[in-house]
Image (cartoon, rainbow, N blue to C red; front, side, top):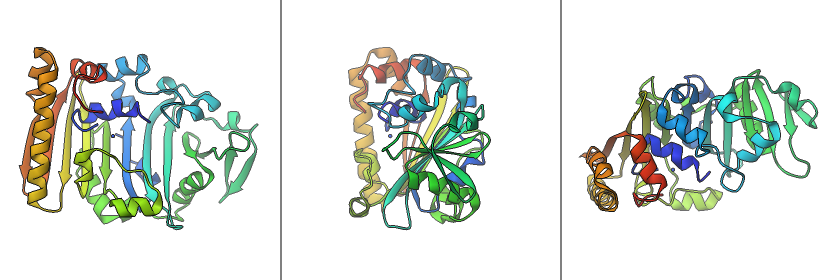
Length: 301
């Protein structure tokens, strides 16, 4: 999912790695990262449409594990995907999983009929490639779950109420409630500790700032030509928050030195604040800023 960082850059330029209310029912209670996007809303934004047309949002198999699913199912993201929710979670077996759920503009049931399938809780789960753990299930006529067999089963479990949703996770739900209703892209996270991640073989962000946070959430609200983005991070104590705030200021300063004056002027509009153990960064993302990031001029990945 490397190029998905481009999408997250739109949400927050300095830290890169909304869904219509309803898809969050497909994020399990024990999620530690949930990201959602409303592409129907984002496609009214000039930055997003330019990135999507140039292939910067949905990438090839080498950079996005989900791209192969799209190829097999003949999904054209720009036409077929309205919104999505992605979650990383812990399951009842003590391991981690990833669930991708998409709201589509069309029903794929007919295209799936030719695939071998197994029924689970009255929902057909289709094996997309022989000898590979790649499955798909239509949770509703326009709601598609993709992933391994166990991951797609998690989607069915959530649909049937067999597994609780993230709304039953008090810490995640409090973060989710902070998101404005008109957020077109958003994320909430309660990262695992390094020890926890190693125990369940879960991938964690290597971003130095994200590693120092106990929880965080971000969101972006698009206009026609820009995207207003906010990021809130919560640390263990004020000392840690002060250290991270200084590190963020340093990253921003270095980025300003690397870019031309017009982009540096835009970076001057990035606002960094600390209130106790809470960090807040806000910015107005423009196409020029995104272009500078894609050229590698901002010094972040």
